[in-house]
Image (tube, rainbow, N blue to C red; front, top):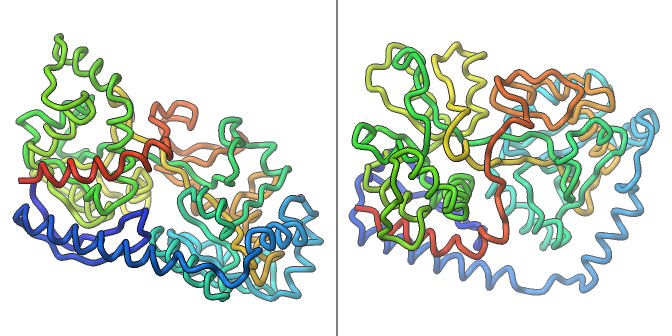
Length: 412
């Protein structure tokens, strides 16, 4: 396996990040780094295990949510009057798109200032937890990957206006979180180097023709990538069938199942680890690219096609599934100082009841799917047509460590 550029190391359970510059690292050094980070995670877990000074924190959070009517759907004009008294709203977001939301929201609702802070998903979790445990409540709205655990622990609350949910795709009305966008991690390719999709299934990525030519983020340091590989492992029966369909024979296993067999063969084919999905797409999308590399990256990066005329496309028909579905959601932080402005901003960003607010526009782009059935979808397939695995949070938590150790032990 080849490594290049800066890699951000993050372990979900430990909720800690570290920066490592990696380039063709010997296996023993990787294990040393792993041990150091795991030790740091353990230290942080001990630090975070100190009881909060408020013994009834969760109950207080539930009372606060009820008092601030997070379970109700209030008229927008009433919310606006209350929000003007608050004067501002602060959002921690893993996306830079809230700069555009800020512009349209402040134009629609004069007197309320939006303060967006672009923070990575893992850092949002770390910052939110530390501030809350210290009794510091800075954030009003949080936009990140689905965080059911933070809801269970009382750090986040859901806000699901009924008039907006009326226009939601049924399968996305379930669950506690208010899903804002859906994405996947498909295989990208350069449309100038390839007239059509150069691969049709995951097993293609283990073939000699793709040795050293597949760009990825490190699944040990990027949670969304580890989710994709763990979905492959969880659905090993489908991977075994896809192998048989491709090669006309049963797979001969050297590992416990076809999922881990794929991961091993994929690693042996020397994928190139790049620091970010942005860099992967930029590398693949260079005009006149003759390197014929392909890569796995967030589908949201397809917006570069529209914004910068980058010659890239994604494979939306991959066997046995395109990828794992990723979801991003909007929450209200516990004890948010501006709860009414937070509710108003969430409504604006979600498109309001009629799906026509300008706050939705930055998200309704190629490569992202809005789970509403009343807006035009810019993608070549609809949200219902995404043939992808759904991430099983329980399976992930139980199997991540095993997967991590397996991945590290197979690196050359």
